[in-house]
Amino acid sequence: MTNAITKETFGFQAEANQVLKLMIHSVYLNKEIFLRELVSNASDACDKLRFEGLTDDALFEDDQDLAIRITCDEKARTITVSDNGIGMSREEVIEHIGTIAKSGTHEFLQRLTGDQTKDAQLIGQFGVGFYSVFVVADRVTLVTRRAGLSTEQSVRWESTGEGDYSIEPESKSTRGTDVVLHLREGQDDLLSGFRLRELLRKYSDHIAIPIQMKKEKADGNETVNQASALWARPKSEISDEQYHDFYKHVVNDTEPPLAHTHVKAEGRLDYTLLLFIPSQAPFDLWNREHRHGIKLYVRRVFIMDDVDQLMPTYLRFVRGVVDSNDFPLNVSREILQHSTDVQAIRMAAVKRVLRMLEDLAKNQPETYTTFWKEFGRVLKEGIGEDSANRDRISKLLRFASTHGNTEMCRLVIMSPE
Image 1 (cartoon, rainbow, N blue to C red):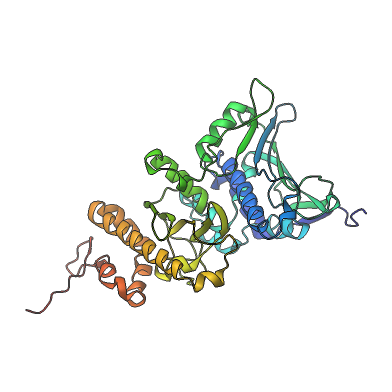
Image 2 (image 1 turned 45 degrees about the vertical axis):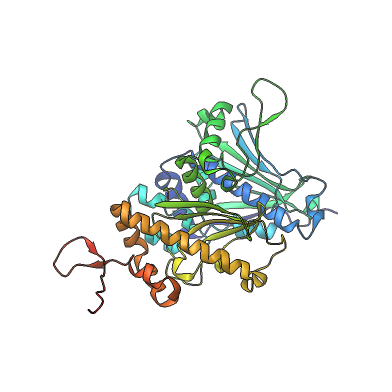
């Protein structure tokens, strides 16, 4: 049975056209970022398949080995990033790829300052990272099939980034997504296998899914990244640069975090925390219902995003990963809400975050001033919300001086004699 839908062309909305022009000509200072964005998307697709496959093993289609594959064709001047993850249906392609800056195109444009460095930091916050491909490519083709759908339900998406995109049926025998970049003139350095390996190790070495490329001087493929969950490695084997790269992957940020904490707890509960304090507040920080914070893994299998049960609202700016060996793989948000183990992990996570902030305030006052300017007003909410840690939070508060000093001051409460 063939797909009755033929090729259709859709126009980007006017604001989206403006976003594309900014992405191509000004926002992205570093053209290398496109590869990090595509690999990150492919990794997420594999994580989603692993999660959905917990309840529907048929989605794996006799192919349990998840991987990301990078190929380049010097003659055709193309780079292809492929994954065998969850893939997308036609509706999902239109929703996730055909809609630029889904999280707020208008606000994205309003926040642009003309300062390219600051503008680049907004990309991850507004979900437009995929479109970094147009910095190096003048045409992009995406072919995808969602796991569980037939070959005839595959989809082909294509755009030159100049105002419209097309969608048509495709015949793809394997699940997952292939993104083909047709490079612009002057980007031939990216057609080097050595160059691509260098970029993958620089930006994506921490990705837990194997990233494979064809061997340079032999047959077969090789894995070019360490392909192990960063948080599962011993701290002594992880550099600050690797922590920073992992943070950028998790948060989709271009700037390193202000601080991080990495701890493995063993005993009645066995879990790992890897938590970060961002250097810049997200655009929706004041929306107490919308969080992008904690990713939950169970035995290194991704379970869910934005687990608000693991972090109180006044610490909603914290980003990172919690990996537990004690939860079942089919754990739900409802189970988490009533779990005493979750409460214990949450209490430990809060203490680690407050300790991070105390260390910054004591040992890196300039960095803490940066934190306070970005997140101080949110941290104040903890005085009313977290009675158990009220004293610790109060010591972290800062106020303007009544003596006209530019430095922020602590509030000292004197006990009556």
